[in-house]
Image (cartoon, rainbow, N blue to C red):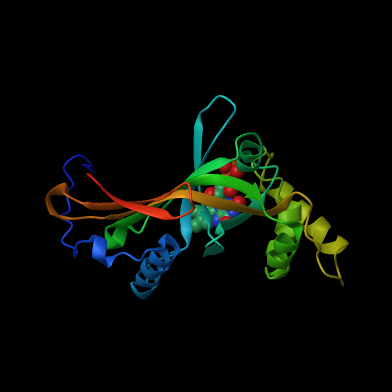
Length: 212
Ligand SMILES: Cc1cc2nc3c(=O)[nH]c(=O)nc-3n(C[C@H](O)[C@H](O)[C@H](O)COP(=O)(O)O)c2cc1C
């Protein structure tokens, strides 16, 4: 298939400074509602990039589980590649790829581990099978075959039979605190609209239009 010559004109309505909420969080929620209304699959999925000890970026999709004035929360295994990378380099960038709407939202910021109370609360809300999966899967390590995973699930299923599955110490959440957000709206002839919210020293958001 020819990828080089594939071109789509982005005929969507533009984005003006006056359209934007003063809060990037409120602006994100307005676009999230548009993504939901448009029926986009997994509209809370974001690609998160971290860096390893050699400075090489690593990117994967995770699900955002909260977006508010404190930041963006997501969950996973602290001993995974991303967990280790965030331990050593507590920064990340993320993108919500709402491509069907000719939109993306980019975020850059610092990352910290969520409090154990918040991780416990979210873990308790997950389906039991996912809770057991968090114990059974040594995420990002090499395994010999699928049966190793199945055996591990069976072992933890029987270990926790008849009682609540506790949160594994190696599993929990992170909080990405954005230093900047960028809202991108595709426009015809690649003259797209881009607005960046940048955290100012006093904590206020400075909104600037960027060249496409
Ligand atoms: C739609 C989608 C949602 C995902 N959500 C999560 C998530 O919330 N947390 C997570 O740890 N991995 C999630 N993953 C799997 C990650 O992309 C990745 O495989 C995993 O976190 C291991 O990445 P790492 O080796 O870089 O740590 C998701 C993948 C997809 C495609």
